[in-house]
Image 1 (cartoon, rainbow, N blue to C red):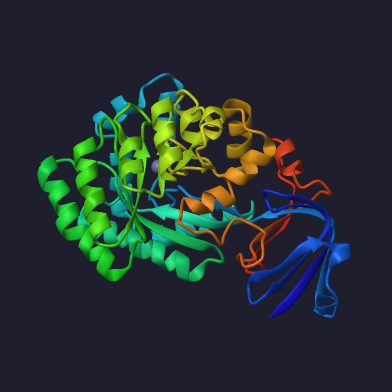
Image 2 (cartoon, protein in one colour; image 1 turned 60 degrees about the vertical axis):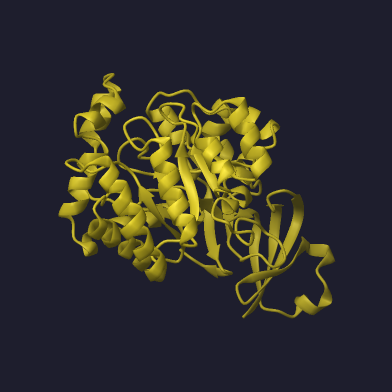
Length: 393
Ligand SMILES: [Zn+2]
């Protein structure tokens, strides 16, 4: 399937900016990118789509979501807005545990339908790749149920889906040691055998897993050929970022409490640093210092952390805007952090960018100025979204 796209007033690759650009796509990948006037003759005879003088950016990559869950936590959101504390609600058996109960009560079909509707909201805003974590099952069969829902989403949605097994919290009534052992000796081997996840993530924090438990789980994942990621330094400073760097993790995510030494470790290892503006702002935590991380050489990523508790955030554009305003990134940097850099958090160099050889996922902005989508707050000018060169909406 061959196609040329013209009529692009402004294009961000995202590292480069082109005016009056054109794209050639063959079999779902970009085969040529440049200015329209320099389009080689070979491509001029291909079927052509004129994008009408609009801006284009790469398909966005959301590299950290908890999109599959039952129920919602509006009551908890209102409690927290009155000043109650997230850690105290979790310790009292609410928070994540409330979602675990609601997820357990839902059938696979219900979980699939709920997540499909949420994924569509992201697609309509240009998110063409979604990482989705398990972690609201806790017990082995319940985690596998979540991962089966994620697999089905991958098979049926227009978006590309990256499945991750998450060790979230120790289930109530379990001994910690036994739970970690079940995770390393049963669940991880089963997930690796069935191919239900590409990576394993651990919520390493106060109220969740200790650094030692996290190391045991991630080392088991590596032994079984899975990639690793971490929820690191969100509520307390645990040393998880340096563990992520040491183990060659894809990403260390959150980083509200991360230190300059942690940023150095990330910069040196190549593990990307993911900031999750929704959780930081909604829980009223310090905003991660995205500017200082970027300047220290960290590949900074922005993600939604969409979940029913700490981050009921549906908007990649709001996530970028918050990181511009509170993390001091430029608009161009924020776009890079939600596209090309974000793909690296999934180990993918062929997503999140408009370049020869990359997957032809892109967003057409309903404006001649591609970054108008970052300028308008709360009103999104999206014209259309393409996945593998085909309209996805
Ligand atoms: Zn998360």
